[in-house]
Length: 341
Image (cartoon, rainbow, N blue to C red):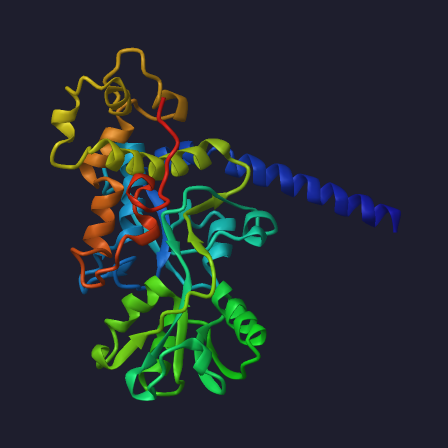
């Protein structure tokens, strides 16, 4: 028995060392293979969806392209792996993808037990409910006895149970693993209610047979900070992915856009010159393992946070989601990035 315990301990130690060694060079591995492998949703309008030719677009897709622009100076050096809610974490843990940008909620369990790291919240969300207008329901508190479509393996499923229990409401869960199965079930009338992150409901409503026949109820029943994730054990890659997001927010705050980024290199503001990598003594890139113009490359090739938001899910998109909490801290929201200096 003692031998078995020692063998198990030794095996665990070897595994831990191997995992650490494998994950400690993510940036070097990415540079060596020449692209970032990014895990995204299988298809969620506005966030990550392929067209008929297999070209991906969306809010999360643009984040992946921003990582590519920071690392390579080129937003096209990224490959997308569509992942379901059930297989997204194993894909990241195993190294199948380098970063997960799949409208994923940052929770304590995922941050600890699953061995993942989150930091930059790219979308502050909350869980909501969608119903048919014909039900004449105005509030989620009127949903007792309803059948509810929900995706398994998500915080959505857990929040649903908590909300109905806390409010002494009864419900019948209709659970599916794949997002398209949940969509089809709701659209065909197999359930009365669809619940997921409210941003997702706006996206999914566009895919229904008759979008105008459905409404999104006012209740927000949870906090859903959606954030890109990486594996634990590689601080450098964690910093790169985090600061890509922070750079996009800082760029918006500075007023730096795709259209004016070249002109802004001549700004008299030392913070802007440092941010764009034109200060002679700047090390903002080399300290990350990147070139000093990494933030310039993000804005030039992808845009600042506000531009990416408005194009994909904001007023310039079909979703027309208001910035709300995702507005800059200086404009009534809570998007806030540490200074680049």
